[in-house]
Each structure stands twice: as structure tokens, then as C-alpha cells.
Amino acid sequence: MNLKPLDIKHARILVTNDDGIHAPGLKVLEKIARSLTDDVWVVAPEVEQSGASHSLTVRVPLRIRRLSARRYAVNGTPTDCVLLGMLQILKKHQPDIVLSGVNGGSNLAEDVDHSGTVAGAMEGLMLGSRAVALSQMIRTDGPIHWKTALHYGPRIVRRLVEAPWAPDVFVNVNFPDVPAASVKGIAITCQGRRRLHERITESFDPFGRAYYWIGAPRQDMPSKEETDTAATSSGYISVTPMHLDHSHRGMMRTLQTVFKRK
Image 1: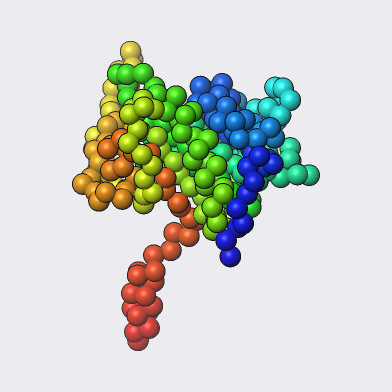
Image 2 (image 1 turned 120 degrees about the horizontal axis):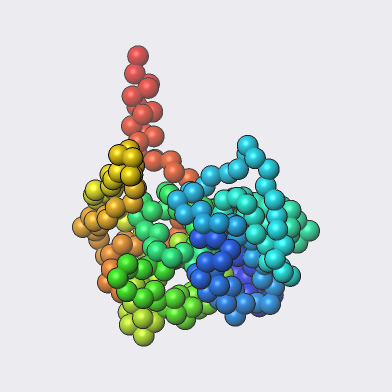
């Protein structure tokens, strides 16, 4: 059964990210959230946690540092932040919405499996909240168009929460690398695919020992128009509903047949 539409003006929003408490994208997301409601709380990592995925800290203690009213830093991952935000800081009145981002860089296609930004939204969903991950595409040789996310973010979040919402779904939003005035529209998309290419770079330190960087350029695979990669590369904002069930129904039926054999 779908969740009922939400009155955003009276909603409580929890904001998090994976780029850290001082990241510019977090400031953008705080502005987006505060344009929607007065009840905004921020719980974000002390330091950058990009690529942390849905990791949870279980071997070392976590500490919550209060920076100001309704603003906290945690020495952990985005997942830790949402968990402590919802079950400790806001345990008496949990948030209606978790917003994660705005990430400095896209979270498209296979990115969602590594993204701490997406994981923050996913944890919010798992704990019973509506959740949205937001990311701004960037280039290394140009300015970051934060104003694109700032301009369109409130409109997108408002429309999302006013719609019937499936209880097992979170939404992944990616803003294209263009100024706000150049955005062609909003596209409802599915997850795309990429061709991974030269992902590891080898170099050597002054002592001749090898070290490696992961994260070299990737090339998008040819994709249909409804994918997130195709939409953003064409100047559209990609809005992708996602859910936690990774089960492949077709393969389930195949294996059911295979394992019935004597």
C-alpha cells in the first residue's frame, strides 16, 4: 500500500551526505530543505566518506558532535549518520524525509552500488522514512553548477512527496552538468549501465614502491532514452525510483526448474 501524500510544510527533514559536514553540496541541500520546511536537521560525517557504500561502523565507537542547533557531525559513514540521526538524535520524533547529498559528482548506473550518498537515502528508507539521494554532475575542467541543484531541488522534492509513494522505494536524482537555464526538463528514468574502462592507475612513490588510484574515466554504454545516463548526458534531470529488492525473478524461475531436476 502506497504512503499518502505528505504536506511538506509540516514535515521534518533529516539531511546527510557522504562528502562530509563541510562540503559545499551539503550547504546547497540545507538550503533546499529549508526552502520546504522549518524543521530541518543535519547529521553528516566528520570527514569525506565517498565510496563508502552502505557500510556500517561496528568495530569502533561512534561519537556525535553537536555543532549548532539541529546540526551534528558523526565520526562515521553516511549509514551511521542516518541510523544515529533517526534512532538517537530524533528518536522521539523521527523524520518524514531523509535527503542525502547534494553529492559533488553523479551517481548514475553502477555508481549507486558504491555511493555513500545513495546509501544514506537507502538507510532512511530501511528505517521507515521517505528518502531521496541528490547528486550534481561535475567536470574536472569547469565550474560546478550548484545553482542547478539549488534551483530545481525544491521543486523535485515537493513533487515527490506530494505523490503516492511506494513504501519500499527511494529516489535517486541526478542534475546534469549545465547551468539551471540550460536544463531541458525532468526525465523519469531507470538505472543505466556503463562500460568500465581503465579503472586502475599505477604509480610509484619516491622509494620505488607501487601505489594505485581507483576511479579512472568510465565510458557509458549505448543506452535507451529512459536511462539515467542517457537523460543527464542530454541535459535532463534524471529522477530514478529504486528499491531494495535485488532479486532477479527470471533467474529465480530458471533455478527453480534446474533444482527440481533429479
